[in-house]
Image 1 (tube, rainbow, N blue to C red):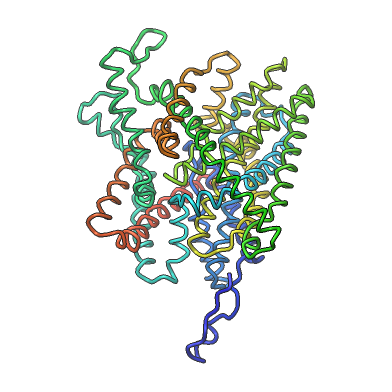
Image 2 (cartoon, rainbow, N blue to C red):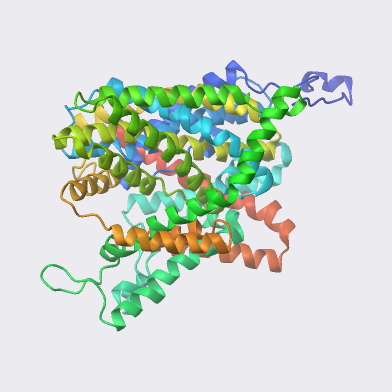
Amino acid sequence: MAETVSAASPLMDDRLRRGPYPELSWHAVIVGWFLGAIIAVSIGYASLKLGFSIEGSELAAILGFGILRGMLRRRSIVENNVAQTVASAVNGASSGMMFSVPAIFILGYGNEFNPVLLTFGCIAGAFLGIAFIIPLRKQMIDFERLTYPGGVAVATILKSPGAGVRKAQLLIGAALVSGLVHYFSQANGVSNWGMGAMLGLPEYTNITWYLSLLTVGVAFIAGRGGVAFIIGGFVVYFLIAPLLAATGMLPTTEAGEIIRDPEALRGLLFRPIGIGMLIGGAMTGVVLALPLIISAIRSMQSAAKLEAAISRDEMPIKLLYFAIAGAAVVLCVIAVLSVESVGLLRGLAMAVLGTLWIWMSGIILSEAIGRTNWSPLSGMTLIGITLLILVTSGLESSVDRIVAAVVVGAATCVAMSQATDLMLDLKTGYLVGATPRKQQLGQFLGAWLGPLVVIMLVFVLHEAYGLGSPELPAPQGQALAATIEGILGGDVPVEKYIAGAFLGALLSAVQGGLGVTVGLGFYLPFNIVLTYSLGTLTRIVADRQMGAEWSESVGIPIAAGLIVGEALVGVGFAVQAVLGS
């Protein structure tokens, strides 16, 4: 980045800067570490309470302004961008580990694993996830131009003070409204509105609105990219569920009672099919995108050989090869050391499987979050650990099987989380004119710290409340624990996964990414899809009635404010709970 500004007046000299703006500086890295640790603790706790995580980039960008600009008087947008990149890299471990590690405590084997080994495994996984996703930056951001609503929101925050007071006012005003709404929602314990029940509609139609302006803001930024996601949800609850009810094909309980509860139907039917669609759609996407991926890697190799200008903007391709090979070896060592009975060959098989799964799921998640800002990370974690448990099927002890699979699975989950986080941050960097290479280095500099912070948080909270208890339910950990128990008991919905995979592959073959996006609508709760549809509809109407320029200059700052306000209040409640504990 080589921006220069000429002096208009000698009196303004102290406000002007000549030469490159600082970007990857120690100021940015240290501020990023500090903010990342705070955000990882807050959001990690929230994910154990709510069952889903939120992005930390927006919070890091805003807080980074306060420290870098307000306290340290530094005025570089790209330096603030690196600070939020480092902070969100630290936070990347919170969702990655909170979706997997609690399961081992819930199953009662919290004293059967080595926490130091698990932490080093998660650090190795984080480096693997970053190294795998870097070659896809050009494919997803430069060529496909995926939206990445969260990355756009962060870029809006970074550019607001310099782009005009009006955008900043819109963003802050929307953040205040969103924060107040979320505060009253949380304070009163009201997060949904059951409109369908009020109208007397059948329970399986599931017309319940999620009271979240953050969701509306995300959908507005995503725009038309979220339409297929909405269609997937509506097909499930407005077409398939009524058809099953009309033909008497709704599933029944062991006592013979018809299941109409939408959450039970989702767990039994729609979620497994949705997971299958994500896999089938993503595999087809990988096949279709393979020529472009190979082309991107060859482009990086050629640029490195010629020492062209582009090679200075990207990480050296040889360093990426070294990171992938080194981290895979570390993953193998961790698998072998996780329990004595694993052995070298099985450990090697687990490392190879884990490495391949990180690569493929990283693409799935990056496509999904790029199009809708929703990440099916928990589903990918569940599948990855399921596959690892199958690899350990030869072990006699079920405890050894669970410990080995979760220790390696946690590393793959952190890798997936880092991959999606980096792609969001690279989108932000693309919009603010950052140097990809420096952002990628910032991600590596932040990724090692998160697992250390989160594993300590897990032990502290388990000691205080007990993971899986009413005070700290850890919903995703409970789902994973139930799945593991189902696998060990021989109860896996294989036919639903396969049916979903065929459907997802077919849709993605028709249009790239369609299987993944529609599969998300099958996978996620319908209350989120309903509220999301309001944001998408608002964006479409705004584009038609007010024009695309209005949407970009007014609508997107407001939408970014809705995201920021709710996220800040959500973290505030989490911090209050942690301090109260």
